[in-house]
Figure 1 (cartoon, rainbow, N blue to C red):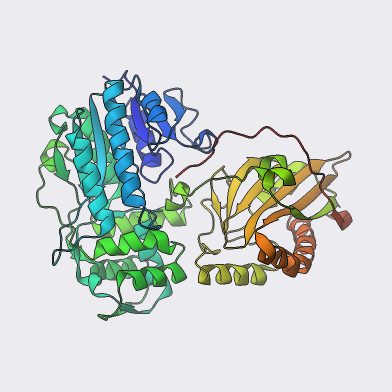
Figure 2: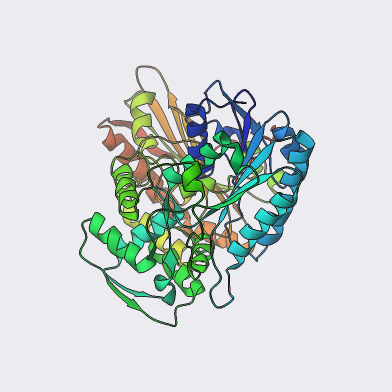
Length: 514
């Protein structure tokens, strides 16, 4: 019944963020679960009266059981994509076991799981695909019937697979590629995936079944590269397969030329070493729909990017872990000395005028001063294994909690007065950048830039003092650049200031989001 809420785990992820609007459009009540309520509250669907938002973690059985209580069905959309010390399999296993227990305790009628599709080649299957298959087996072995939709590569604006394809073609006119470019795949468009997910709720015959879902085309990755270059109106790319490029080397190369980090690129490239072709198509007769070809899916994704209408992005699923000292500023809490560098200027402008360029900062707009140095820092971070500047930002104007912004992540945003960013670049410490706008009388606004840094060890302290002169120069230039962007005079400054450290604070709830 549509009166029973549908639990969606991973609500702020790439698929979950698109599934929820589709469920609402179909008339369902939705209970959206994620590990951070504030981040979830920034989603366009968060204000819908048929959406209940709950904080929960699939690795925490108690919170997962609370989230599932009172629901009729659940979508299980959580995967440990990041290949870090190979702990993902144990985490996925524990999370799946928790879902089985929570579903049984809450009396759910069914679970719908978005799994992986791959066939072994030479007896080898990537560890991530093995883990996804294991998760399906764990869920289907439980007392609550589970529908497993085995999915190959998903094509859509903002997906990690699409971004890798996009940057490979757009950045490299000549490519030396590994042997896996010859593997067969049956990519499916994200909108077709969403239709299948919602359709399973409408058809009781899908309960407890396993289906392969794919698009109408069976082709190689090399074919996809050719199709993308044609749809993007680029010259044909020269592709030279070589036998020595392992998935690890391929992931490292993808890390260097695209915004997708190696930790995510590795499981994706490992998965491409296996064929991913549907072995049956029963679901097409149960949930009929127009399956988009790879060419149509790529064309649609490019249109969404050009129109700046990307609904969800792989970057949405990034960690949002604010250090405790970010909220209290207390060095004793932090376990060390908090370094800071602050500059301010008085502008002949109101807060709305000043906020406009601040809300556009980063991405294609840049940082209003020293953009070459910002790009150099981003390149250094990329070489060190960090995220670099290339991932840009989700939207050119809008900012939400949890958004990636170059090598920062938005921790807090309070238009038109405050923006707090957490550094995600590689560095010997933790760093925050706060932009504060305070309006005085007569349309005068004080604009502040404050950098705070908690060093780790002696190297962290040396790192801070080595960059301190650059901070002074860049912050001063940024203040003048922001004033220039709105064509308003600087009445006073830029000048240094020191932020007061508070000794008391109320720590917020755990705000980790995968």
